[in-house]
Figure 1: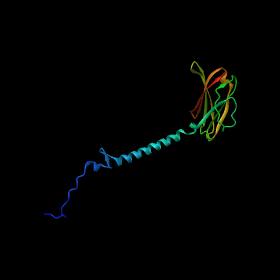
Figure 2: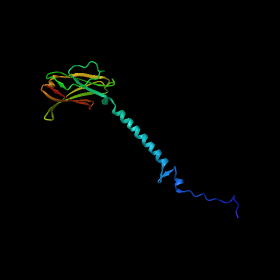
Figure 3: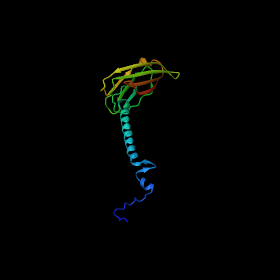
Figure 4: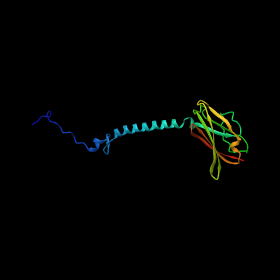
Length: 170
């Protein structure tokens, strides 16, 4: 006979469910999945934050306005004019809404007259500017609008589109 000290008790049999409880689910380790999932989520959030910062750069917040008069006060909310009389100057303004510098070295205005749904005779006016300019305003000479009709005017900062406006010369 053996005494109680030398006997090795067999472990009590537990159900498979109780062994897996809190550690695995259907053969998957829950803690491991939670840690990996949290890491993946953190990486996705960082990538999303970086993307949002890139999108909100100078070109993303730049505005382009066309009017029949020179814009003196850039702090006011100005909308582009859509109709211009024949022979008038078309003034433009490009700036950032938050008042910071444009952050570009090259500004281009592309002007195309629409005929039959297609742009005809696209012309460009380009400006070399300092990166720390906070705004650029001037006018497009009347020679670009000799004929009545619809015109598409596009603005670009360092080759990236800022805006596209359609105006009509009457």
